[in-house]
Image (tube, rainbow over all chains, first blue to last red; front, side, top):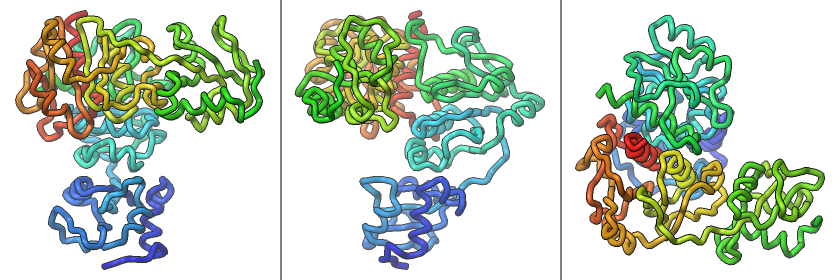
Length: 246
Length: 246
C-alpha cells in the first residue's frame, strides 16, 4: 500500500500516538529506526510499518508495508531527524510478575532515566520491572530511545505498589529500599529473591512505601557528594546484586 | 539596582549566554535556582545575580543584586518554569591536572550524560575530569542541571586527548579503556594512579585513542544485553575503582 496524503485517516491515527492520550485510546505506540522496528517485529508486537517510498527493510517480514512520503514520516515522527521507517506496535498488556528479581519504580519522572534503568535492568538480569501508576509513560518516545531496544527484552508491568508489596512479601520476596544514612552496604547483601524499590528523582520513594522495606541499601561514596542520578544509583545496586549470582 | 527593560544592554548580554557562542564571547555562563547560585557564590565564580523584585536570597553575599521583572527572568532563563534567581558566573579557566585519579571524556555528546558523569565522578573521588575538545559544552544548561551542583566540586579542564595521554603515561598514570570482549574485569584491578577514558555514546572511544590504553576493563553483565548507557557504565567503573580505596 502507498499513502501520499497527510489527511489519510490511518496517518492521523498514527500521528496521535505521539501523545499519551492517543496511545491509551488505540493501545498502540511508535518505534523509530530499523533496529527498533526489527526488535518489535521479532517480539510479535509490530502491527504496521511505515517505510519511505523507494526504501527497503533490512529484515524479512510477512507484514504488509505501508509506503509513505517524507512529509508523512515527518508528521508521525517525534524526531527532527526522522527515520525512514516507523513501526506501529501493540502496547504490552501483561500483568504477571515473573522471576525472583524484581525492580519496582515509584514515580520515576524523567523519560531518559526510565529508559536507562530498563537497559541496565536487562544487563543485570532483572526478571520483571513494575512501574507505579504515576511513573512516566513507558511508551514515551524518549523512554523507548533510551532503552536502546532493551524494552523488548524485559517483562514490564504496571501496578499499584501499595497493594503489590504486601503480596510480594507473602511470596517470599525481600523488599529492598535505599537509605544513605541508615542502610546496609549493598555489597554486604546477597538476597536470592528480592524486590528493589527506587523512587522519584526529587523526592525518593514515598514514605508510605518506604516503611514497608525489609532492608535499606546504600552505595559507598564520598561523604561530601552523597548524590547520584537515580538511573546510576539503580544501575549500581543492580550491578552489585547481580555480581555475586553470575 | 533594578532593571525593568528587556532592551537593557546587560540583560541582552546575559540572554546571549544561553548560546555556546555567547558564553565563549563573554567568558560567562548561567546557573538557575537558589541552590546552584549559592554554590557558585561559595566557589567564587559568581559575578552578578538576577533576582525577582520583592524576593530575597537564602544566603548572605557582598555582591550587589540586580532586581528584575518576571519577563526579564523569562528572557534570560533556559527553562519554561524559570526560577526567581539566575546567577551569572565566570567560566573556569583552569588547565592544570591534579590528583592521581583522572577521567578522560572523548566526545561525549549528550548533556544529561555529561552532567550525570560529573556527579558520579564527584561521588567516587575522581580528582580531575578532562574533556576532549569535541565533547558537549560544559556550560550548556542541561549539563549544569544534571550535575546537581557537583560541577563546582570538581576540577574540570579541556585538552587535546591525543597530546595529553602520552604525557600522563610519562607521569605514571595507567591508561584504562573499556572493551567488553577482550578486557579485564573491573573488580580485578586496583590501580593507584590512573586515567580512565570513556567515549562517545554511539561510537565509543576513537580508535587512535583506544590503542594508547594500557589495559581495557569490562563490567560483568548478561551476555544478551551487553549495552549500558555511557553515564551508567562510567559510574559503575568509577564505583568499582573507588570501592577498594576507601
